[in-house]
Amino acid sequence: MKIKVLGDNYAPAVQQARELVRRVGHKTVDSGADLAIAPLLTQKISAEEIKEPLFGTLIFHPSPLPYGRGASAIKWAYRRKEPITAATWFWANERLDAGDICEQEVIKIDYDLTPREFYEKHVIPAMLRTLERCLNAVSIGFQRKIKQVENYASYDGKIE
Image (tube, rainbow, N blue to C red):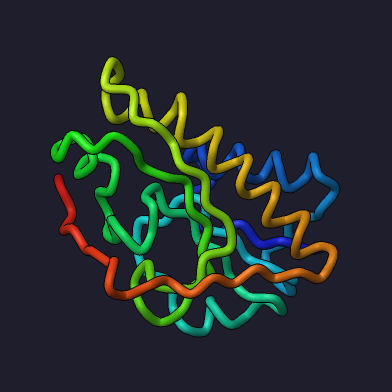
């Protein structure tokens, strides 16, 4: 399978996702992809980019979507002293963080760590585990799509 990896190539999460794609036997490409993945987005991608790959585009979000939509999910979880967050891969659509869920793994928040340390030590490994499950499923022709329940959705603004 040919996979396009979106995002800042120098970000550790993006680099690790690229390595995982190769390790599980897929090829990374810049165009003509079967699937696009976005392990770390800092801006919304266009409708054209979303629809370009054959199977679609998967985006990572560090919250238990539909709860915790928005750019600062981990910081908000810390501010609210929430017990858990999640590693969620969802299928991109025209709405922010609102596409069908492909994979999700709950993560207990470790308050002995700063938000950044927690992200690096716990969230990125969970992101990679769930991405591997997504890639394995799509490669055998299974596209898991679980609708997000809008009644449980929340959106938080960006924390600078």
